[in-house]
Amino acid sequence: MRIAIVKLSALGDIVHSMIVLQFIKQNIPNSKIDWIVEETFASLLAHNHQTDNIKTLNLKSIKKQKKLIIDELKKIKLYKRERYDIVIDLQGLIKSAFIAKTLGKVCVGFDKNSTRESLASFLYSKSYHIPYEENIIIRNLKLVSLALGFEFTKEQILNKKPFLFFGNEDLKSTAEFLDKNRKNTLFIVGSSWKSKIYPKEHFIKIAKNLDSNILICWGNEDEKKAAKFIEDNSPAKMLPKLNINQLKAIISKSDLVIGADSGPTHMAWALNRPSITIFGPTPSFRNTFKTPINLTIDCSKEIDPKRLCKNDLCIKNIDPLKIIKKAEKLLNG
Image (cartoon, rainbow, N blue to C red):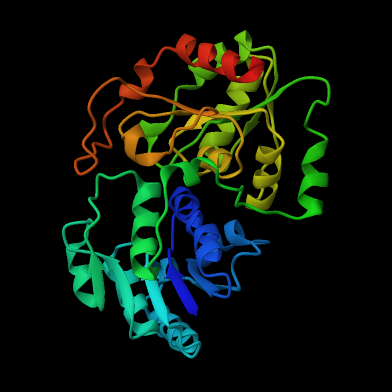
């Protein structure tokens, strides 16, 4: 069976989707799986033995130069030659549904009541109702399992295998930052919304209270400034800018990852590494899958997944002492 999965972006959303690969391979061992993704995030899927091909698009470029849409349409038509038996759209947007419909006659996705862009469902040959407020990992697995005719349990999710991969060169390039004689903790100081970012002053307090080699990763200039501020005012050390494969590698060797609701923090869960995800204006029950080593802490208020407020700064009110307590438990457990 030739299967195409359409999940274009973003970092955390792709991480939440990639778990489906091992379930497909377990239930349909001879399947061939291609993944359609934005070029920017293609390296997230790199080195993954569960995908046969990574097919990239650069739809974001169209916003800057409209004429580039012709090039992207040519790519999609080229990918159509693979003659997929089924195309599964895990994105649930009109643009991803259009891609899925173009790639194969049999294309499936979420129904009109299960996604933010309800018109997308009319482009599928079959759609499924999976409540939008359902946990995102379970949502993705439900859609794939219904489309391909297999079942799964939450116990199987808890017992998943790590599903992010990298090269030996990525391990070597990050090994020098890790302390062989102490536990290593990685701070993730950025996120896609400003309201999801945990205050740098709180990170300083955490760094001062943990007996650990603390490293800080960053991805843009604002995050770099925050990382430098934390480094200047605590025992934490700022890392150089890492690419996605290096980030996978250092997370795989970290004893604990602490960060907001963001792609790099979710990568710890994907790699079966201990983590604490700090939630502000997004719901923890939907945006991660808690395990004995993957803990969450939130604003202790009800968050409606369908009505998120990007201006809600409740994350600032989360006491760092609560995070320190959870961190000590994970580091010493």
